[in-house]
Image 1: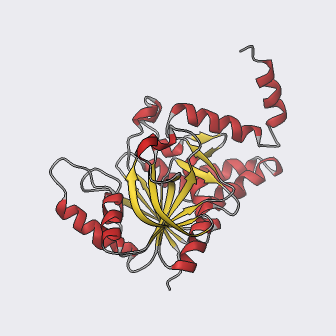
Image 2: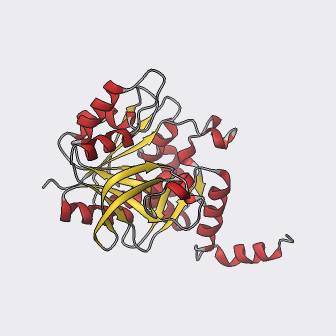
Length: 296
């Protein structure tokens, strides 16, 4: 069984929910305190053993490439001039470009979250890989990708990161898996329903934030593309449903000890920034006092 060492991150969207901020800056580069959202995702991948990261971008996403590139000489010189006070910052920015092998691919094809996968099909080859978003993540221990890889290593199947629904709105926001559990927290999926609502849900296990796909998903994506009607979007779920119809095993893996952070909308982004700031020992004392001082 091939080792999981590649990951794909789609990042070609316009981030319209955050306009005008995202007119010139990719939404993936929005900071959580002092680190862009996409870097949290990349660090999770690297911690799980991922070596090659393919980021599918658009013409307006140069900022992502610059971030994971080597720091420019002017910045290096500036930090060196800061002496010991800035030495840790120099190490930090130099480390970013060495975390993994980064490859950038321009997205082309129909709208939909299945298209970025077809754009990197020739780069993935016959290997399993992670597919994950650039504006949300699950904070967990072990991290979500380690948990997905562990399930893949045991069962050799595609795995969907999942969390238990906590409120009725969750059934309206996320995909839903139905099936039978092969062990605690791991479901052998026989049905996938997109945003079913509470009344039509097939379980309380919601698919969010990241996936591990076996390479055979590409054949089913090709079929889904051939069947795509004019004006429709191409979704990876179209391929997953075809896989299930063909008897392929797909697992929903409940991410244990996990908390989901969605930075793709303003309110959840602000909540994430505040929570992460409060978790930072270097600033949380003063920040807590500031929050207490607000007369709300």
